[in-house]
Amino acid sequence: MKKFNKGLLTCAVTAALTIPMTAMATNGYFAHGYGTKNKALAGGGSALPQDAMAAATNPAGMVTVGDRMDLGFAIFSPSSRGYTVTGPANDGFPAFEFAPQTVESDNDFFLIPHFARNWMLDGDSSIGVSVYGNGGMNTKYSSTANVYYGGEAGVNLEQLFINTTYSKKINDKSSWGASLIAVYQTFEAKGLAAFGSFGFSSDSANLTNNGKDTSTGFGAKFGWQGEVAKDVTLAASYQTEMGMSKFDKYKGLFAEQGGFDIPASWTLGLAWDTSPKSTLTFDVQQIMYSDVAAIANPLSNLAPGNLGTSNGAGFGWEDMTVLKLGYQWETSADWTWRVGISQGDQPIPNTELPFNILAPAVMETHLTGGFTMKTGKDSEFNFAAMYAPKSDLTGTNPLQGATGPSQNITIEMTQLEIEASWAWKF
Image 1: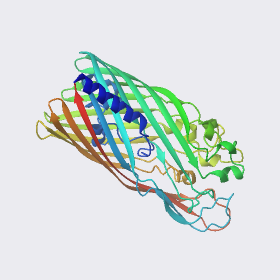
Image 2: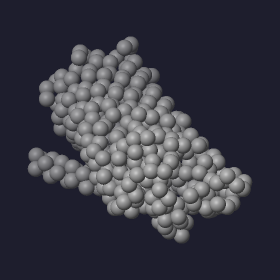
Image 3: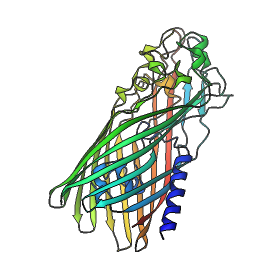
Image 4: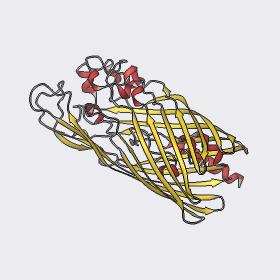
């Protein structure tokens, strides 16, 4: 059995570290949830830890989940992501009036793994490791679309988190936890050479079409949970901003010479045991996109030699608040069911559409469901599904010339995801 566990652990870690974590533009570019049970509750459950992926939401919960290992894979489909431009293109670049057309991105299916292992040090403390992707951004527009007058265009951002967590009980009804998080991210951009040709980049040699670049960094996450009344648990967690090394191959694109830090976030959660076999969860999450220049700087900053400088134009994203409501219930000793809904205001103002064609992160609503089926005394199978209905955003093109009628740009996306995971208890 020990040899089996060791082999399974090795395979799980290898899979989680080698498969790219990409393409999940959900709440901005943060995932709607982490771990199969959490995702089935629409990302809620910070006050209801149920597996070793709990550290990604609230590290305080790890001491309550026991010795266990979780391994899962999601198939994610950000379908119908793309843009539509209406209105004539009279002046061309550098006025930058886009060609009137409707274009959908390629690459509609992505495989995303996660892995987590928790060890109880004693009855009151634990240490765990969780490996998962954050969100990510991915678009690929064909060369025939010629979006930015530079042939094939798009971006690909991949982020891998390795979360090491210590959690300890304060007493029988509360606990705290802290995580050290190591992050590895890659980025690639294509089709943006026109911004260099017309002098908008501070370093046109490091603007676009330079292949994948890598970046590393660290951050921390802190959490608490406690029973505050009979059958009611509250939780709070805070994740620091992740200071990342710069994307040197794209220092003529991202503000601060290629800087692309990961924004801080916080979550408050409640879990109410409405009966001995059912629980209602409610979470509020805030993501501070406005603190990262490459993400938050507005398009209105664009000027000759501007891209890549500390004040360089970015995606113009604002902070995002997400409300998450979930409910789970047991129908037998072997079956637990979950449903959830989350709602947030997408972070893109309608004045920021020209760059956000590359990252149409307009999702606001996520509908989720799933179940847990016990497969043995110490094992279980988990399933979650997510549907994010089509969401779009329309605004005028602020980069167009002074003559002729206004151009309108609409960006849109629909999302589907299914995830399965297996858990072993020790």
